[in-house]
Length: 84
Image (tube, rainbow, N blue to C red):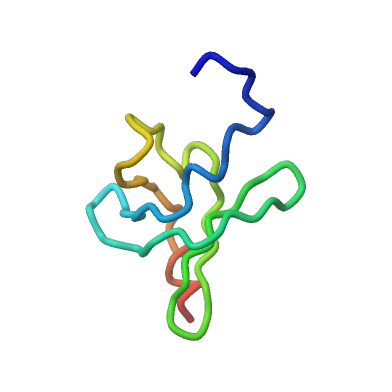
């Protein structure tokens, strides 16, 4: 709709969406979006912990729609460090 969007977008649109890497590896489902300073983090439950993905380019790829998968291009080691 044509209404003013808050600075930083509408982060609630990411909750409940599946996150995959550009290679097609499934990361998980966004359970929460946290705001840390001016940045949003996608929170994905992972066993006893959680994976935190910065929701900013170039990590989070531009979206084509509001209900499909979220595609990320994480820097080397981001997902490995979070799962250790």
